[in-house]
Image (cartoon, rainbow, N blue to C red; front, side, top):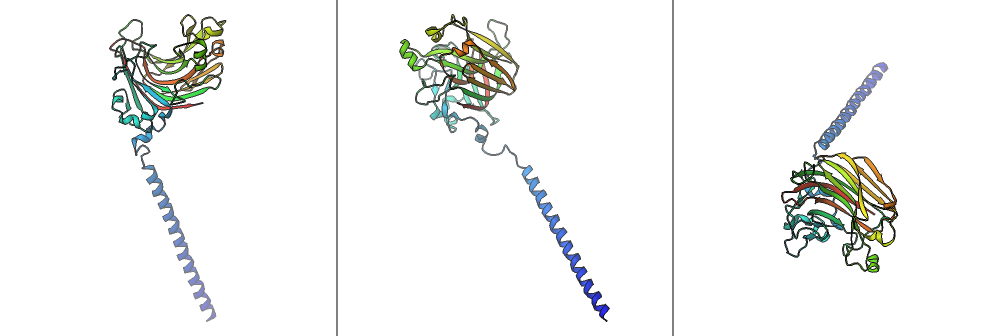
Length: 316
């Protein structure tokens, strides 16, 4: 009789153990299925869905103005629009920008387009038209700029969308244009000291697209012994260009990084770096500002170009 009671007790515990074990495995399986469903759900989310403006968040126009190749107000100067009008997506509602600076239909960048449109649509010191951004570190005073001693860095991602055939002189198949610059400007104190009416100065660095190849052109002194106030001249008798070919970028996206510091320029295109470091850089007396966009280098009325700017960032 005692043995029977013990046997029944053991069987009840064994059955309870089996039921408990089954419940545990069932729960674990349910958790794994829930986790698998969650992973699958996350993977099905399209990272590009949402407000298209989110994709353009890498371009902050707080310290940029844009110059257009037209003179709609007939003041004999190219039309310009300023940071307060461009930032926070404001450029999208500016009708005069349409056709010149506007979101690409792919919602991943901003198109900059330029055509040669004749007198009144170019700046005072250039015969070439542009749809180009100009850095303003002080939005209320364009004569407040930076120098090589303080330095600056610009990073951008861009691609050339279209370039017209070259019908002018020379051997190029396509019209050439500049996509980024470090431009010089005479400091206000030196303007006053020298009695200058203009703060115009040469560009220190130009990044030029030529038949799909990207070139860097840097200003250098014709005579490295030049000193004194002659260094504030913009004359071609004082300054000339030296260049470096970064190779073929064609119509594909490329990354450009420019680092400016005292006596040195580091220029990097798609991971390939070239360093300019010479006496001319050490003697550069001008202040500077960055530019980016499309700046035509042709006066042929048929010339035009379009670039797409994906990202733009400047630090000092």
